[in-house]
Image 1: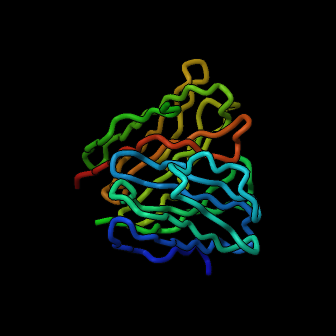
Image 2: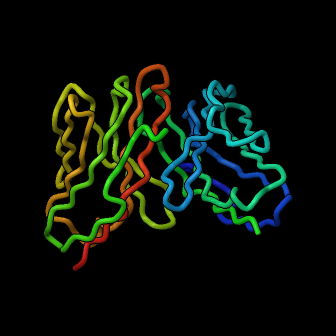
Length: 114
Length: 113
């Protein structure tokens, strides 16, 4: 595809369930990021991948959050035992420049935890 | 710790007016300052960016002004149009974490026709 693709676009789940969010970055982009966007809170950094490795996981809010990237391409963000405070839009971005380059964002996955 | 502070939270401007959004940063290692524009239901997209070797950068109706000594930078939108109505985020990166953009909390701009 031409841009960053995320799925699902919307996910409603019950508290305590696990969810998986998928990101398909722009082909050839080695850097991949997950951000979380909550109302009035801006964009909160979660994790950064360079290739398949994640040198910076410092933004993951708790050990219920994990992410992986395979084949230097698709990434999955997993949230276990979801809580209501996890409700947000989860944005994925990719870049061909790991330092100071333009980030290309997907349209996000809106997660609602009931 | 909020490393990039953005104001105002919301802004209403009449068509043809000037929109001004301000950001302040704390980390003196930051050396890349982009602005992103986000329309409802879409992801943010890069609008314009500046590095500290210049004090101003202009692209069409959009201008970034940068004040290194004050650790502040701002976005000016000249001749604002209803199509400019969106949320604008300032951001910064640099130093040992130069791969990571730290974003402000955003400004919701409404341009009335």
